[in-house]
Image (cartoon, rainbow, N blue to C red; front, side, top):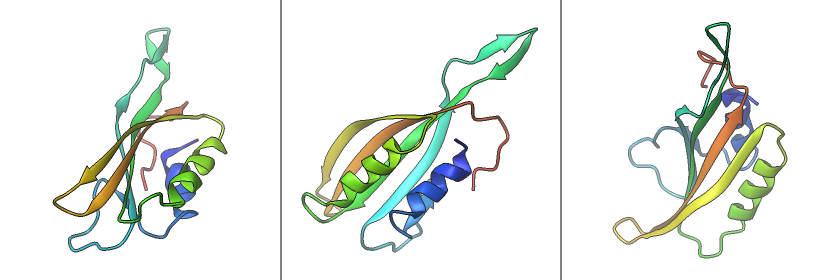
Length: 116
């Protein structure tokens, strides 16, 4: 799985998908995804030959028990090469949003690939 495929997967859930942060004034439910590093890399002959990119997927909603949360998890389960877990659920009183956060790891992602 590549970062572009991750973005495309999230776009099957909602058109409101943003890389790193939403635009100013964003309203309604939306997804934000961001890569933030890499896990242990495999080296051979003095070169990195494989690594996994890590990051977060965040869903912001004002709907309690929003069914989109299950849709996100079902979509994440559908792709080989993607590991994930729910990291937190936060009630953001200042914005009124319920904020769901998942941590992901994409196996075999290559450095320098298009991040969409």
